[in-house]
Length: 114
Length: 111
Image (cartoon, rainbow over all chains, first blue to last red; front, top):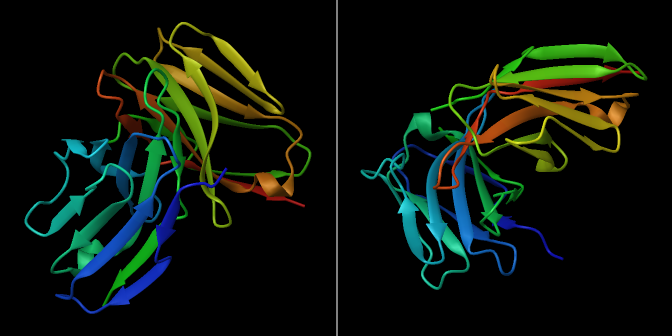
């Protein structure tokens, strides 16, 4: 069974440039998460999808971040414009949902903003 | 916001020794999960313990949960070099299936 796929694995951009990350979850997983992880810290949830609906985006900085999951399968997270503080690893995870919410993670995208 | 706090922040032991990591949390939970993260494989789910369970085993892993103290421990027996990684606890505290993560324990196994 294929795991969660993310691309790109690494991205280096200048500040104020846009950037996009792509995620394809495990087949059949309706729940998809985007996390941000800073060095030495645990993952921080940015947004959670149930199928194509964003059901928890309270921690997504909406002035510059956007996400979509149009057909309820793969998803894209975008930052525009990027700031120096956005440098982090962006993780995508998927879950089969209730009742135990075990999450399966992709390898992440390491973003460096110069 | 991060609910779980792992202790210690870093742990270095000799190969073959046992490693114990602790996690404390603040609110009532449905379950608590432990994950491992290393540079090669990313974040991987290790074990889940439900709020009505007190102990769970999986191979060389043993997890305990004390809901009265709001704490959990992860024991890795007979450690190996491949166990070198960061270990995170994550709590499922509500009906929205959001996991709240700690900052992790960095474990180094010395050969």
